[in-house]
Image 1 (cartoon, rainbow, N blue to C red):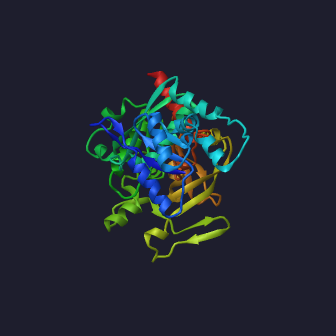
Image 2: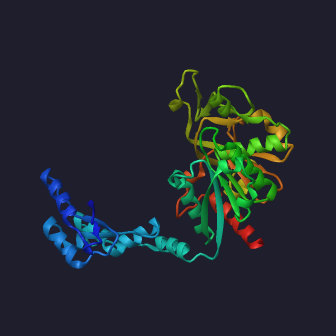
Image 3: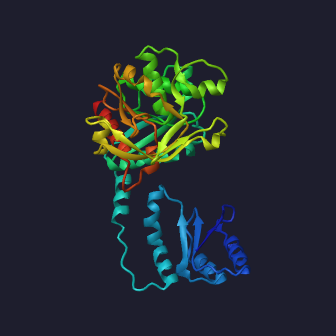
Length: 377
């Protein structure tokens, strides 16, 4: 199967097949002959062009598959089926007869996307907003959460640095939920802290992921627990001087499976991350235990810094509940705010496990909470 591009020349109003012909010729020169050509195009491919490509590239006409631009990637399975790609693959392998494909779940996905029953706006307050693909997995997980609720999620990116200079209220008051994603370094973190405070005080659904959880903990430590200089060791390391009381610290060792992993002082950054899947135990009766429907979960991590467990009692007295912990009880994995409609911070990355057919429960419930807010407006 060979993917090619059919460029469109607006001046002449025609698709050009020569690039595809030359591409196939180059493949044939090294002994490769494609059975199927998938042709990317912004414009409909006329039958005569498909016939020309089939003739000059020595493939069957029905194996020249158009691949048009789509409104969403989730439309691709249905579009390729209508274009005959699955049948072309069966033909290439000589599989006949073949059972009729069941595309019901893809049809359900598209129905949920194209016929939503409502809409919510979610503010993503991050530091990489100039490159929206940096948060692509989060955007898709929000889409999956929208599917679970038959709701269109309109995610909008806001540069966290704005909130270091200006009041968040004028920017955030029209949103039904706020999400603060992960990131590295100190830039924009004070803005994320202000966004977390706005969500906590205004009772707006808040989801903090990785750094977003750490900023929520720092905000609670400063505002509720009276640790006015609360911060992260990460920021002190970056600045080269001690400026904060580190409620978030650089983890030296942790348990993975049955083994204790210890960082060496000489470790370079590339070898110091807590990576991969780890188990967490959830507190009975907590919001996250309700959302997950269990008290034992496994989630994927990618970070170097952890919330310091020694501040747990002090923070819980102020209403910040440590509702998810590592099995050894040393590493906070989830925090939530007592007496808040929906305020959860997680040290892991739930977006990495979300799927269109199985939206991550945190994202599904986060969107549900946003829908509840929209109904109250």
